Amino acid sequence: MEGVIHIRYLSGIFLVGLWLIIKMFRTAKSDEVRIHSCKVSIKEPYTIFFISDIHNRLINDHTLAKIKDVDAVIIGGDLADRRVSGTKLAKNIKRLQTWGAPIYFIAGNNDHEFKPEPLLSYLRSNGVTPLSNEWTYIGKSGVTLSGIDPYFSEASIPALSDSHKVNILVVHEPAILKEFPDYVCDNYNLILTGHTHGGQIRLFGQGPYSRGCWKDGTHTAFLNSEGYGTSLVPLRLGTAPEVHLIRLIPR
Image 1: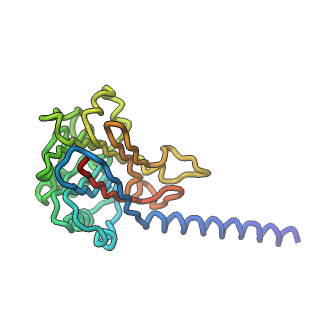
Image 2 (image 1 turned 180 degrees about the vertical axis):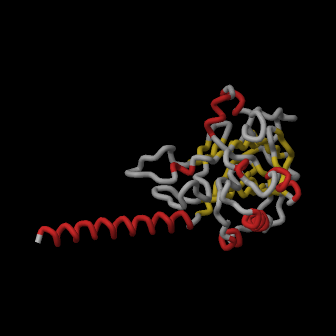
Image 3 (image 1 turned 135 degrees about the vertical axis):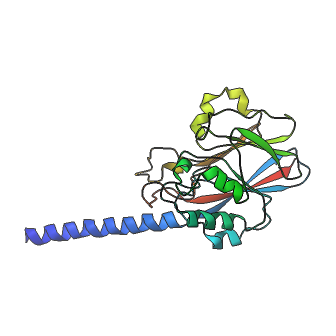
């Protein structure tokens, strides 16, 4: 009798574990579109599509098809890693070209692992603009976009041409911001980060990183995305794959 109970107990544990793994796998393959708004000194509304930490995942084109009127696409790092083929990367770039909007890329810590060819050169030849410790104007509304890249070069804050413009800063790892004086961030209206995956797998609400977030600050809005793909294992628990629509709204 005890042997039968023991077998049933182990079978129950196995079934619960199997159910949990399936749930984690399905969660990792899902996605959510998070919509944020940021009031800035701009003449016309401007919409940014932000995605980070795609890794080895193929972007869901059905999700993209639901999104209209994007003015710029920003990739916040870890577009690729050692697992990503040239074919998959090409498909993801093509899908991000859905709206015909300019695409900007700021490197992440895994992007250097892409093997088929040098990633930055590949992106330039496929219509994507990398920003490596530099800035550029995006759109016609006087918005500047800056990117910090400590992976392909030494990290530095790009010098802004006009502090009165609407300034956006992207850095893959939010911890890198701690390397710069606090007042530097005050020059930006919006800071976008990724990397953490929200901890990716959280047990009893605890994980190696805090959950992703959007914060409306007095001078600066801040986003830490939980990312789109996964690293190491294609599983998520207590976190959500996400992309972001950020609407810049005239004050």
